[in-house]
Image (cartoon, rainbow, N blue to C red):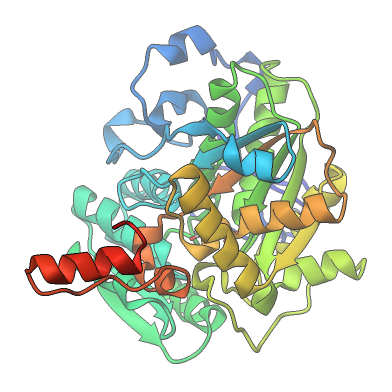
Length: 407
Ligand SMILES: *Cc1c(COP(=O)(O)O)cnc(C)c1O
Ligand SMILES: [Zn+2]
């Protein structure tokens, strides 16, 4: 195992480094003689139902360092009502919300914190748009490491309480996520800490990659035609692509997969670059969206996400807050899934792709649903009626039933 630059291909040993000293490109984990690794579906099928079933393709040398709360192996549900409403034939929903802290970030945190133990770091932390906070804090607590979280003041209070419950220290930065991230990276430079999505980022994204492995395993070791992914920094989208490429190299899947990304209109720097045919990202300063977990104005992996979307002939769309709320409602009412706005953007984006004929009717599509609605309970008030409040009397119950026309 080692690190390799995405841009100049220079290789490094597996150290604490995330930017190529040669060209400033991003570093990825690579596995020696990948095509010869014994990554056997039959053997994997007999293992525990969490992401560590893919251990051969995870960057940990000594399994004694593994910190697991059971993240991974979430359901891949076949949609029927929602797919009918969109006139699609094969739509799957990867409900990645039954993880320990209810978002896909548990995958990344589990791997990054295991690696922090392997590096013998004194503490861990993260820069967070909300969900990474609880994921990092929970796994840090399990590992017995102190945890420092840097977040912009605008992050949802519920998510902060969740992270605080595990004993994390939270630093709220009066500014944007990008400013919180900058402070976190300064902190990492001066202390012996692993900031999971900054200085040990190459290991962090390896956790997210397991979503691609799971989707293919759950389809019977084959790939779907198209995967639709929410984008903040663009890291998840690239991680999915990396996972698929590794399975291809191993000969476990063959087809080409279109990879598409969705952002909220109020913070869509990657989608604007795609739409305007640019190869670079113009950072967004005035951020305004209910999908707070996707609010990154200057996405670190944006340029790479753009390249992945182009190379795989995917597409990129942005969706309004109204469209996101519509998707949250549809997922709950048609599929029984309560998803947070940042996770539901993929369904809003799918609807737009169908309307704009960017999708073939018989494509086999997987939409990622990356965070639970329980993390943003306030958003339901936008689309549900208020509860009835009555006195404990038959008369009042009858009045209520009349209003509901149930009498
Ligand atoms: C973090 C997050 C993402 C993806 O973020 P990237 O920075 O692009 O990896 C997607 N959905 C939710 C709910 C998230 O919290
Ligand atoms: Zn380089």
